Image (cartoon, rainbow, N blue to C red; front, side):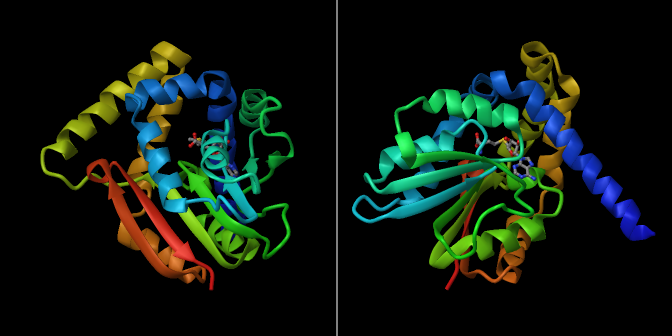
Length: 244
Ligand code: SAM
């Protein structure tokens, strides 16, 4: 059936994504710095300033596709002693690097959980915040991930997504295209020995919905007051929504 074919295609996509991150896990952090010229740090800080984890109350933060823990560590630093972060990722290799980076610094305030964004192995209605940074683009069924985000958030909880977006500044768009199609796969080849994976990542950015369309998908998942804000001329965007 068509449905069966669709399943195979989506499983293939997830399999490909898993291969990419398994092969790159150990070099992931240095690759990020190289490819974004350090800008990913600025974008991640922008996400945390928008999130503003509570410094005084209990704050339960779920970071999906959390990889090596960048968002989690920033949230724990910005939040108070009662900020707790669960890092969920489908890839053991990425989680392993995250666990190692965390060491014992944060004790019980950080947990690493293996799981799929499309069907979170987590209870409903408990989290104050759900974040996903550079992750949703890799998830085959985005609608399922958004529905799961809505399910696990507590009423009043916030959804925040940081993702590559579409550059709309004349001039910058041409530079950005040249950079992503020529330079990124080349760095991928030189540093990770893997040109194809990085080519794939560049293409997945092109295919990702435009900001308005993605905002509508977030609304369709049940979120209210959905907004989006471009970063660095639209290289990235932060989408926000609330569960009421
Ligand atoms: N959030 C981290 C950051 O900003 O540095 C990591 C982003 S990395 C580009 C994408 C992550 O998404 C990878 O760690 C990958 O394993 C994870 N991922 C891909 N598909 C997933 C899925 N279906 N469910 C959960 N995580 C997934």
